[in-house]
Amino acid sequence: MSQKKGFSRKIRLRLEMCSTCMKMCRDQCPTAIASGMESFTPYIRSLHVNLNEKRIRSYDEGALDSIFSCLTCNLCNTFCLPKINEEELMKLARASIIDAGINVSKYSKISNSISKHHNPLEEAHQKRFESVQDLIKRKKTVDTLLFFGCIGLYREKEIARATIELLNKLGIDFTVMDDEYCCGAPAISTGFLQPALDVMNHNVKEWRELGIKNIIAFCSACYRTIKNTYPEHVPDFDFNVQHIIEVILARLKNLQLKELNSRVTYHDPCHLGRGMEIYDEPRDILNSIPGISLREMEHAREEGFCCGAGGGARSNFPDLAKDVVVIRVNEAKDIGVDLLISACPLCKYHIKNSENIGNIQVLDIVELVNQLLYF
Image (cartoon, rainbow, N blue to C red; front, side, top):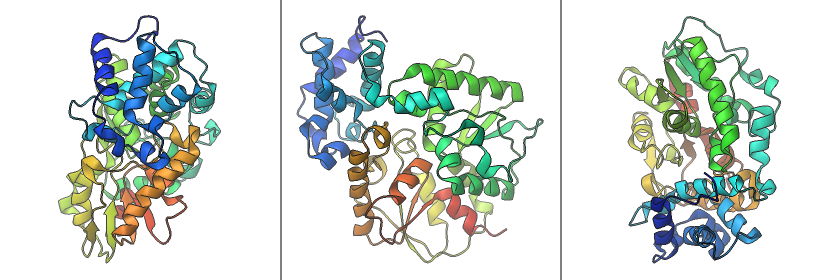
């Protein structure tokens, strides 16, 4: 989208509504709560964009920090009566700022890494499959693909390995890519569309060359992006995309799981929960485990509090991201759990590294099921 052309009438109306409303979302936004700053509230972010769109005020550094600090978690939308969808507004705003040639180099670390290394973590691309090389088999005659994503291969290797082991135990025949790139989600959320399009086209090209029909992802951001965003940009996108939770749930009645006498809570990843409305499925899996005591945090399901890492915040606003996750971990502590489960490698990685995590164990749901499955 070009800044010169401006936003569509629909977007301008949403900006106007958001920046002039009664601001019920201000007390729900994780960045506003963690920072205590009015500039980090949803309506101020929209106000900056609205004033710029009307040529009343240009973006300054404070306005850019406000816009680019949004976690894109969309928690505010849960409490927004007209359902403005701040997540989409901020993605559009960021993209338009970049398209207008405004200097955003301080927020470009992720996109630069994706362009150079095909991952957002500045890790060597040739080491992408290093952590799972002993487990993977590339099969040319299989039409189901396991898409790993970047965090699972570079940071949360235990999740990647557990997913492979679990799929093998479930008897699911799958293959992997020869040259997997980032799904593009981090670039999209920070407004850098071209790097996202580049990795999308690369991935889809290889899927088609491999004859892939079904894609399984264990990263919530990868799952949502491939399932919802790829079809918007890739012609004739005809792949069936599943999250590993859906794969497990479809076979749950036939699984025998060991007893687990623990107090457990589930953290809803923003991409999987508000993004894809998958709330009951992970809880159904957890409740099927004998002995488990599943407890809900103060903010759960549609109102689930973001872990703080999304929207590029962990890279671009690390202190803010740390402050947000402390709030989330305190909610888990308040209900006295031993184990916090999520279904997103980035959520797990960020939560387990929180300064106040204490004795709470943090696992991905696929790790837990793999550990408890009788085999």
